[in-house]
Length: 422
Image 1: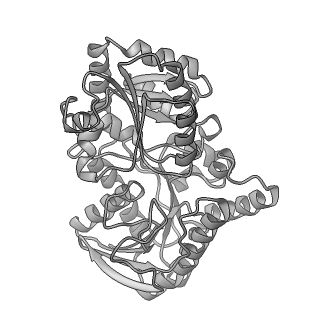
Image 2 (image 1 turned 180 degrees about the vertical axis):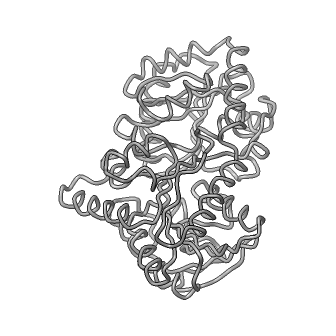
């Protein structure tokens, strides 16, 4: 198949937002498919173009057999609403001409967010009369409203109308969780138009390793109970609960909270920790991908967080990497969220609702001296990951969905396929 992907992040380095997209594209190339990827100049997470790249109107490179077409967009290190909206909007518009110059595919896959990118994908699918899959990584505008990014009623109405338009005109919609599928069902999207293919982790890359390793030694964490968060420090993460819990546990010398990543909340979180003099909290930037397995293995427990308003519109992918590393999960998330369901089903961790730092602190204290129980939860999470959320099985499902669409024709949506989520 000749497949065109459209997503704002595809990088030569494995930064957080690009990992899964990179893995999918390169795996499909290895299976004999021709992949063209329409994206922008690599700039995540700092909003600065990577060394060796230019933010040009049109440029082409090849990465591991994938033809990568990069188009111009407005890029800024500022994380406020309007610079981000301008970045998303300009990339979504330039992706249209980038796709036209790249040549006709057999099927188009566009990622959301950004939501406006779907309009460019729809126009290209009309121009070439080929099927188009809308891949939903977050549900917009729901996620932006829940995070407090968008509050203006007219802006919400505008993007809600755009969302409905895209659902109506997409040949098929791919979602990453059952809660997403229920959300779309409530919005009137026919279930036969939706395929559930979960986020994954590669159990051959992220694997169980010794806890007392070089990463721990470099941070002087030997002998400590390490609670680790690794990922985007974004508006849905409710990491304030974690810092408040750390404040309650300042007198416990054997506890450390390690927060790794970047995002719009990082400066505020660091300031909050500084004011409270939280010497038991360590902030680190994103780590090189080669160090990722060792980094996750250095934790006694992996933190996964989601605020109360985002339960039905977001699913942090970090949960699958924690499961792959055979570490138990400490989930700060609504009890009706997809995260809570995953942890409950696998019996691989503990769930604490948001806005309850005292309960979170008690949960962390309860983990001390529980090495056998923690190891058992970690083994159960790893087993669930391997059986239901592995890279190979999810790429299989994605390939089958696209093949079925191409066999069925441009205007015949495929039936939902069997997925690792059952």
